Image 1 (cartoon, rainbow, N blue to C red):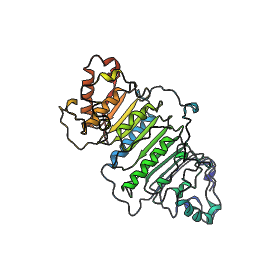
Image 2 (cartoon, rainbow, N blue to C red):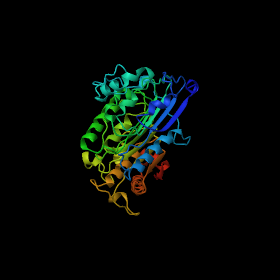
Image 3 (cartoon, rainbow, N blue to C red):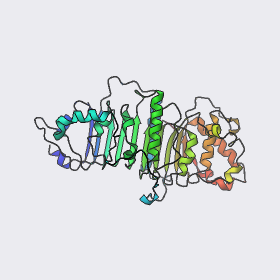
Length: 389
């Protein structure tokens, strides 16, 4: 066990819930192990025996997340220079109902905690310690995620990635989670899909985004069918990288962008039937571009935007912006074009091939109005790429 004194990175795969902690001890030695220098820990568990086959859309969601996540390390023209978020930039509103004095990542009212303490008590003196841990990644944990998170110093960890889980996600405390610098929560399709799960997820999203936080990176993945909205009050104002692989309501994105002054990269899965037109009928009628000269920008920091719409309808190569209707799927693509027009800092936009054609047509139509070109001239320099997964 000498390795525990000097080890800084540890990756353990193909683990089982029953034997995971036995792998931290040598045979016949049950003394507490203290990993004095360990900074990064990756735990990957074996696939549950009753795991369902992933739907075809799962690969798209993973690709969408990767497109945004890996972009943060790219040294390209889309990164640019931007101001740094400081503590003085954080909102000062109160987070009612989310008091968390002990900074635990788990909700103190979670029904799994009592069972956890009952299981832990007999072996409490032999649990390994990770005093210097900064990055924790857990994937495919088959039981409630709260049972394993309690073993780690959550209050000192900066980055947490929880992937392919199906139990216990609703017990994650939004206030404590927002204290991280980086968070990823990926919920697998297994045991997720009932309407009450989606409504619980919406409530959890509302709590998470309402907490004042200095978090800089957030990736959220869930197999939702209803459009997920975001609260009007956004507390995660220091985010620079944000990824949604759940289906987001496009109507909440303008407010989101206007409240994230440091956001550089955004990847989102747009619900095909969410549309501003449904709430503001007639506001975005074809050809009504003059108002772009009178409305303020939504963001001056966003450099890269990835939007997967996932429409099931077909589009021809010669389809143009005038073919869109105020209530059909094309309305979403038209409104995405309006979104791009209100982000003067944008350098790169990626979407699937069908949507890219429709959005290009809308942008070309906007630029044909000479009077508003000075207000949207950044669109001339925006690179539009076809997103591939």
